[in-house]
Image 1: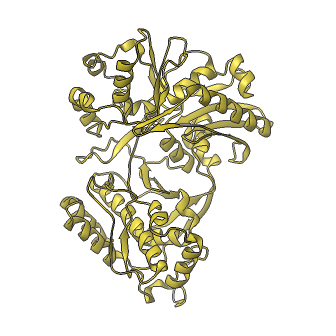
Image 2: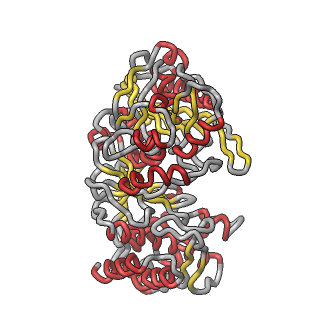
Image 3: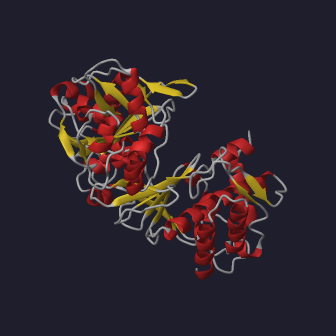
Length: 499
């Protein structure tokens, strides 16, 4: 038996996982990370990344007790620092949500490239604006750019490494040509010599050096594989690898990522694509709606108890398959939508439409906390369906497997509700952590590795409830408020009428 090591270098912790070829987790390790926040500032110490990654990996490798065949690291998207030529950090790491930079110059000079790549404009927290900020603030004449996982991959191999296309996206890499747009960088006075090479995720970067082996417990000579962003790693861990398949992650907020053969261009810029290891595309978007609205609107309430009561009241128990004609479990005989809430976690929406002034609202009058709870869940499910309607409008295939991950899957009621709203079966995985996705990537061909490493927990069928009418009322309200584009609203109505 052998193991592949997947490492998830996150914001609050680093997690290492040793995974067998059949998907069994043979060992894990985790260590906390410390952030330094002050207003728009969010920094971490890169040396702490390495110390805690080494400790977590050593724990996972020791627990597994089997030969290790490869290792890959996922990291937060848009987190960068500057190092000297030997890899020693010269600056703190500016984290993915550090907003001290200004994106206007990057957009003015490189806007034609960002338009061609489908995301249209960079945001202040993206890596390229932050690189320009760091270069202005750093006086050292000889620096190198390092993304978060570049820094630790260099420590693993003992030499400078290329960065992966996933983590390089927010630094402005040309994902179509798979190279840096040097004309743009030259116009921005960014020397080409500070940039790492770029490779696809899954490319071999080198092997674990003797010094790293001593610190991490990984055998010297273990292949080090180029990883990707944490979001793409979660998609790999969910096994959403075939064109038309989608991973819908619903936790505090909602994130959808799928697979297409061709690059999707979104005129609104709310959908943008990463590059997959096999050269296909991974489009996706992040909504500002999600379960975060529950803790805000129902503070102190037992959400598990509310979920159980909602399942009883509305006849939707995902632990049991729906049975036709069973009145006690048939939602058709009940009012399934006394109210629906648009559950924005904070002001402004990012996907499936861009509306900085959007705010939460409720259609109908919930009578009690159970109805308030159900209204929030229903609204999140409606947003999820609208995301798929919008992706279909853009020409993305949406007819493949829909895999649900994230904290919301702990609610059987919510899972069955989402299947009802989508009018599609939904798949739940036993484990879809980003660290598992990195073990899949370290295993060689991701599709082949995922076929054995990624395990299905359940497939939840819709109950047959018809929620199209309240969904269309919800879409109409978003359009009436001027947030949802009329073309997107019309397409949602058309798809709903033909299903």
